[in-house]
Length: 339
Image 1 (tube, rainbow, N blue to C red):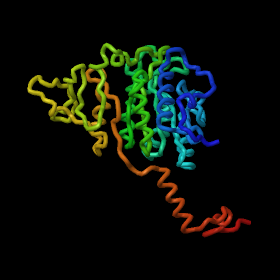
Image 2 (cartoon, one colour):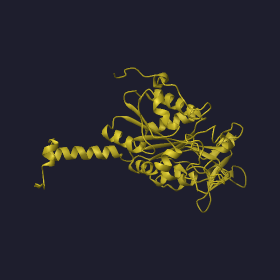
Image 3 (cartoon, helix red, strand yellow):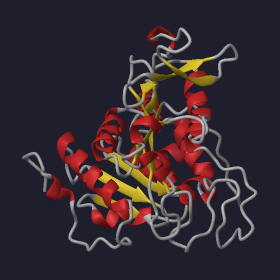
Image 4 (cartoon, rainbow, N blue to C red):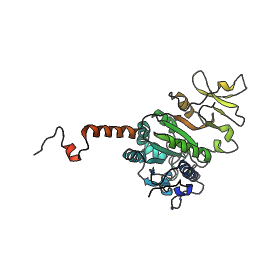
């Protein structure tokens, strides 16, 4: 049955009981997604949510849309097949830092590289929650967990740096507790034609509680969060008097407008459509201890999508070869008989 009237947020809720730990950041993300879908005018029958394995991967059960709970790390590959087979579908991938960046790392980077028309929501809580608190590919160095009792010696992945390195055409970040910002970021991703990655900082209050409290707490948020706005200078702080400037070696540094001759003109003006990856990459590499945490759209560039290119080739092949049966096509050309 096809929807005829715009759907409300309630229509995107399934009849399944939501079963995450009380206080989990996933609740906030689910709420933002359902609100965004309603505002975007999405329909249930044309929307598909595909997940892998992990706490976040329960997501399809809680959406009133079509959904597919797949296997560990393979959601981008399966979602690619869905989108190529039916480009008119609105296909979303829900994954976690372990699911996407460990066992699923290969599928993740190639989905970004190929620019498939998928929207990937990567829940990053910097821990393995479903399997009870082991360190993940994004856990900070020195992290004490059940699998690293003396502290992790691994260097963590920075998901957005990885995405930019794979030449992703849309890269963004938001936070589970920043409801309006997260909702708008999801809507921005939905409007993008190619692969859109949204990293969502998500709190696991059972195994990694307070992972982002140093900048999400309301008492410090204004001085610790940098909102990226296209065409606007990179200013932050309660008085909007702090900014990001590039030094002579193209490295970001924090400056204060009005101090030491610094003016607003010295602050970098954000360009999310910049061809050069240098500046967005520099921002993804800024340490949380020394710099504000940037959120928003890091990159948004238009380029051809995989499904468009494949279907153009299919149409061209049909024009040249005609709509013959599979048996006829297999019997053409160089064939031989085995006796």
